[in-house]
Structures are given as C-alpha cells and as structure tokens.
Length: 494
Ligand code: B12
Ligand code: SF4
Image (cartoon, rainbow, N blue to C red; front, side):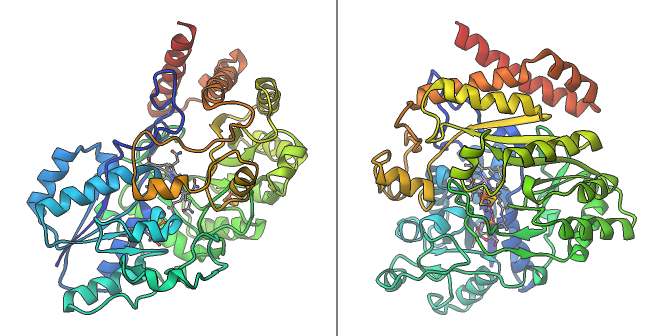
C-alpha cells in the first residue's frame, strides 16, 4: 500500500493573540520551524515493522505549502492510507486537508492522530471526514491498523483506535487512565517501553531546514529523551502524565545518527528534560564516554537543577535552557502549583549566568491573580530583574482538562462546552478562552506587547545581546525578531 503521514498546512490556525487588526501578534512560525516528531515516530515504527509498503512523509508547515500544492502532491502519489497529525487550534486545516485528499482519492483510508484526538476523542471520532482516529501514542497501533487494512480485517478492537461508531461503545463507561490527563476517557494507545521504539528515520525530513529563532544554527534536530510529566501545574494540559525515560545510550545513538546526517544542533523537546540531577549527569556521562561534542539545549524546571548538574552539562556542550518561570511572585507560583519559589528561580538563573549557559524565561500574563494592567507590569518587573537572555511572554490560555479551566468554569469566566463545539465545527474566528474576568483580550495582548518591548528594548540588554551574537544565523534571527517588535511598536504608536 501507499501510505502517507502528513502534517497539514496551518493556514487557518485559530488566532490566539489578536492584534489591533485581528491578526496574530505572534505567529506560530515566529519562533522557528520544528519537526512533527510524533508523526515521524509513527512512520518510523511502521517502516521498521512492516514490509511491502511505499511510505511518504510531508510537512506542509515547514514547506509553507498551500492547498493547491497539496492537491498536486496527492494527485501525484495517490495514497491508499493517510495518517494526519493534528493540533486542536489547527483543526480547520486538518479537516480541509482530509476533504481535499478524499476528493482526489475517494477510496483512501483517512486516519486522524496527534494532539487533537487525545484532547477530544469523542468529537474527533465523530468528524465525518475520517475513517478512523487514534487516541494516544500511535506507533504500535497505527502499524497494527495498516496490517488490518491490508487484509481487510476489522480494526476496532485495537486499543486506542476508533471509528465514529465504535467509540460509542466506550462513552457510557468512561475510563480513568492515570497515565493521561483526565480528559482521555476512552482506552488510549500507550507505549510502555519507549526505548524499544525504532530510531526515528530522519531521511523523511532531511530536506527541511528546521530551526529555532533563538538557536545557534539553521539546521536543528529536535529530540526526546523522555515522555510525559508528573507535575500538576494548574494551567498545563500536557497530555501524558506518566513519565518514561529513554536510556542515555539510546539517546546518544540517535544523536550519532543525526550527526552522521549533518545536523548541527540539538533541542530536547521533552516536557521536562531535567526531572532530576541524576538523569542530566547520566546523559552527559554518555556524551563524554563517546566523545560527542554537540551544541544542545533543553526545556526544564528550576527546582530540579543543581549547580553540579549545570557544570557537567555546560562542559558537555549545553548552550541554553528554557525554564517555565511563568510568574514572578511566590503567591502566584503557589496558586499555579509550580512547586517552586522565586528564590529557586533566581538561583537557577544566577548559576546559568555564572556558567555561561543562556537562559529563556517562559512567562505567562493574564493570570487570575493579575487584576489590573499594573499587576501585570509589576509581574514583569520580576522578569526584567531576572534578566534572562530571552523571554517568551504568552497570554494565559484556558485549556479544558486543567485545574485552571475548572476554576474558570466554576466562576463563570468561561462558558463550558465551547471547545467541544469548536471540535465538531471548527472555524478560524474561534476565540481561545482567556481569564477575562478582570481584563479583556485586547488589553491582555496590549500588555503582552508592552512587556515584550520593555524586556527587549533595554540598552544594556541590547548591548549584551550584540556581544553574544556568534553567527550570521543568530544575527539575522535577532534582527528579524527586533524588526517584528519595532513594527508592532510603530503600529501601537500610530
Ligand atoms: C514540540 C511541541 C511543539 C513544537 C513542534 C510541534 C510538532 N509539530 O510536533 C512547536 C513549537 C512547533 C509547537 C507548536 C505549537 N504547539 Co506544541 N507542543 C510540543 C510538545 C512540547 C511536544 C510534542 C512532541 O513532540 N511530543 C512527543 C511525541 C512523540 O508525541 P506526540 O507529538 O503526541 O505524537 C504521538 C501521538 O500524538 C500520536 N500521533 C501524532 N501524530 C499522529 C498521526 C497519526 C496518523 C497517528 C496514528 C498518531 C499520531 O503518536 C505519536 C507518537 O506516540 C507538546 C507537549 C506534549 N508533550 O505533547 C506541545 C503541544 C503538542 N503543543 C500544543 C500547542 C497548543 C501548540 C501551539 C498551538 C502553541 C501556540 N499557541 O502556538 C502551536 C501550534 C503549532 C502550529 N502548527 O500552529 C498543545 C496541543 C494541544 C492540542 N490539543 O492541540 C501541546 C499538547 C501542549 C500544550 N498544551 O502546549 N509545539
Ligand atoms: S507546565 Fe511543565 S512542569 Fe508543569 S505540568 Fe506542564 S510540562 Fe509539567
């Protein structure tokens, strides 16, 4: 069979941070291009565990391809089975992609996987465009599904694979699988041993130049050393709660394979790379044992770093850490259940500065405890004083299945059921829920822009940033970011 895994275009993504003209203030590609690793894991597993198929992979987001180009591609390859990966905010594109493929190849089997069916299993299964949906981790079950399709057998007994009819059997008896967030109420596919998965075959994506706007090169490989996160931050809907680690040996095998393909930089996209100091040091030990000199960065938590692990990681090529700082007061951190303190945040950032590790502070404004623009600005005082190398400032979005969302619903801040309604009837003008009890979205986005300008337009910061610019890529990235902020500034002033 001819089997395609596709990351659909994102042309009709819901606008999450509308500017004065209703356009997205920060587009998804403002931060770079990153590979859809989940879909690639699924294809790599299929390739390793089946024979006789012709396999294709297409990342329309990285290609910036439009629907006409996609049509030409589908006409050219005429697939028998297509697996479409998804984000909820991109659901309109997911549906448009499915319709287009069906138009060109009416007999195709269309399977929806990815983040959307994990978040909204029932609504996803009921979308008329699809023949099946996969809820959960797709590697093993998609391979099984393809085998059943090939021999014309029923597939609705595969755990995590549903049709609009078969999912009905589970809706009356919701399950509570503690490995996932509570919203996953139907049995979901789950990979017990992530080390047993075949290595990602990046030959399918080597033609794309993935990059991070705050990376050091334009040739980035993202990589996962673990899956899941056991913390319970009130705003976060990272779907898998159970935490599984890959062995340092498997991770380093993958790094070596990437180096052989010419990748120059590595970003760990784990939800939580530094779960503890032991894990970070074991990885560095393995890098050192193999003599691997790489540039890498990760996303982590301040409460789990130690000076020793940072020293070791820096010596093993660690360039940067993105920390989820989120807010700048101990009260705020407690309300968010971040399990950390401002003192620990300051300490972690100070160690990084001392050791020459770049820092990114991820920050969220529009929290329920910020009642006026002044509250937000006071909160930004902490960020400015912390003085990380980069700040990424978002407006809080309320996702169902989080404690924060439940609070918001209980207090009448959001109307329940809006996301479910969107999930059966996706539209671009959908407004993502914010905590609008005290400030409306326009005010929050205005404060977001103000916070960005305040952070990035400081003379000492600009001078330091220029000093740190180590390559043409970094210079151009920074210039692009600055131009975007200046443009926004002019628009606000005008
Ligand atoms: C890396 C990442 C990104 C990267 C790369 C995303 C990508 N293309 O994969 C970037 C930075 C681009 C990104 C962007 C966004 N992201 Co993001 N991201 C993640 C993160 C941290 C890890 C994803 C990952 O690699 N997971 C590991 C792989 C192995 O798992 P996976 O992707 O889930 O894939 C498995 C299954 O989903 C399934 N599967 C996936 N695809 C398919 C396809 C088929 C056919 C099948 C059968 C199965 C299947 O099998 C895979 C293997 O087990 C997750 C958090 C998380 N832990 O999931 C958030 C997450 C996916 N992002 C999220 C969001 C909201 C966004 C943004 C909307 C943020 C924003 N406001 O702009 C954008 C949207 C991008 C866009 N196109 O517009 C949400 C999604 C919620 C939802 N219901 O859609 C998540 C869950 C977390 C969160 N709350 O922020 N993101
Ligand atoms: S915000 Fe980070 S640490 Fe908190 S639950 Fe989500 S992934 Fe885990």
